[in-house]
Length: 249
Image (cartoon, rainbow, N blue to C red; front, top):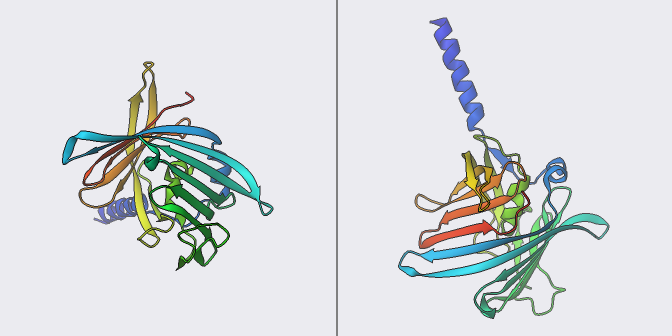
């Protein structure tokens, strides 16, 4: 009986350890230094709507990651260009995060649909940038500790310590978005080998988020290169796929 209780206790203990969630307020510099990939990546983004199955939207995302100094500190600079069918679909995104902890310091978007939106991030608040001309978010202010920038999810996932069964609660925020910063849980649900057009295979981690009971996304992240190879998403009204166009094998 004593042996049974001890075995049961150990089983429950290790099950609890396995179920623990890594809470991500920031990302340690050692992970950033070990895994950050500089350079340009391109993704084909394909969207289908469930009520209009014969219609779709297609975009190409160009994302360039580099390191530069801002006010004497090393920052990670991410420049995005989103290209669609016409100029109204084009979106420019410029982001800076502190290389010490991956926390944002600045974010700016430009598009015909929303105009110019720019934000400065402080330790205890996010404010619309008053130094940017025609900033539609110039009067914006949100009192909050710094969250991670959700616009950089494709870059963020590549520097996480991914392992079988790991779960991450990430304090994410879309700059200027309707929802305040909050924790979103991502979990490594397993592995899968993806076939490439040249007959090779890429062994990937599968990182999943469930937005609700019906909506989810799965990111396939190369174990070797740590690049996001593709994403499958069901967002309720439709499905969205992101596929990396240029990959160094």
